[in-house]
Amino acid sequence: MGWPFVGETIDYLKPYPAHTIGKYMEHHISKYGKIFKSHLFGEATVVSADAGLNRLILQNEGKLFECSYPRSIGGILGKWSMLVLVGDMHRDMRSISLNFLTNSRLKTQLLRQVESHTALVLSSWAHGSVVCAQDEAKKFTFNLMAEHIMSLEPGEAETERLKKEYITFMKGVVSAPLNLPGTAYWKALRSRSTILKFIDSKMEERIKTGSQNEQDLLGWVLNNSNLSKDQILDLVLSLLFAGHETSSVAIALAIYFLQTCPTAVQKLREEHLEISMAKKETRELNWDDYKKMEFTQCKSGYKRDFEVGKRGSISSQKGH
Image 1 (tube, one colour):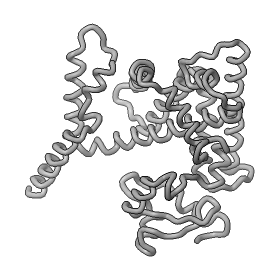
Image 2 (tube, rainbow, N blue to C red):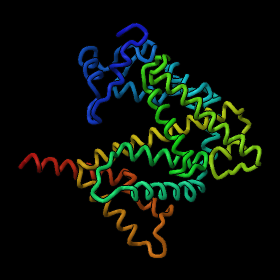
Image 3 (cartoon, helix red, strand yellow):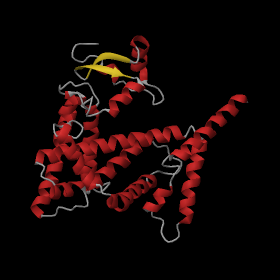
Image 4 (cartoon, rainbow, N blue to C red):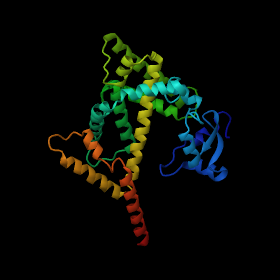
C-alpha cells in the first residue's frame, strides 16, 4: 500500500511512454494480477487493468457503480463540478451543457471555430521547424474551448494569462495531494482561485452591461438556467478542464500513432484532397464536407477493410 497518506501516488504518477502501461502498472500486474489494491491520492483504492471488469463498470455507471474522483481532486475541481457530481444534479448539469450544443450550433458555429483554430496553429509553424505535438494540441484545444465557453480571442493578453494559470491548475490535478506551500497541489488551488475570479469578473461584466451573448456557453447559461453563481463557476471550470484534456490527449496520440502507419496517412490524405478539390466557391469546410470524411471518422466498414489490409501487409512483411 506504500507510504502513509501518500501511499503509492508518486510512483503511479511517474511519466511513461505512450506505447507502454508504465513501470508502476507492469510491476503490480506481474506481482498481483490485473486487479489489485493500492493507496492512491490519499485513499484506499482498487486498481483494475482487466478489460472485462472495466467494461462492466463503464456500462453500469449510475447503476451498479457510481462515478467519482478522489476527494483531493474534487477539492481542486469544485463541489459543483460535473466531474464530481453524481445522480440528479450531475444529470441536470450535463443537460444544460448539451442543450447549449444544439445540432445547428455544432454544424455552423463550432465547425467554423474548429477550422479557424486549426488554421491558426498550423500557420504558426515555421517551415522545417520541430514542433511538440502535445503542446500544439493543448494550445489548439485551450484556445478553442476558451472561445467556445467565454468568447476569448486567441493571443489576447487575458487569454494568455488564463492559459498560464490553467497550466498550473492542471499540474495540480494530477499530483500528490499535498497542500503544502510550493507543492503542485498547493499551486493548483491558488490558480483555481485566480481562474474563478476571472470567470466571475466576466459574469459580472455581462450582468451589469446586459450583454449576455448566447453565442458562448457562459452567456447561454446566464440566460437559460437557474444555477447559482458558484454552480456556474464550477461548471465553466469543469468544462474547460474536460474538453481541453480529453481532446488534446486524443489529438497528440493520433499524431503519434499515425506516423507508424503510412497506409492510414495516405488514405487520410486522399480523402481530404478529394473533398478539397470538389470545393469551388469557398475553401471553408461545411457539415456536408465533414460527413464525407468516412475514413477520418473511422466508420465501421472502412475500419474493417483497413484492419484486414493491415494484417495482410504485416503478414507479407514477416514473409520477407
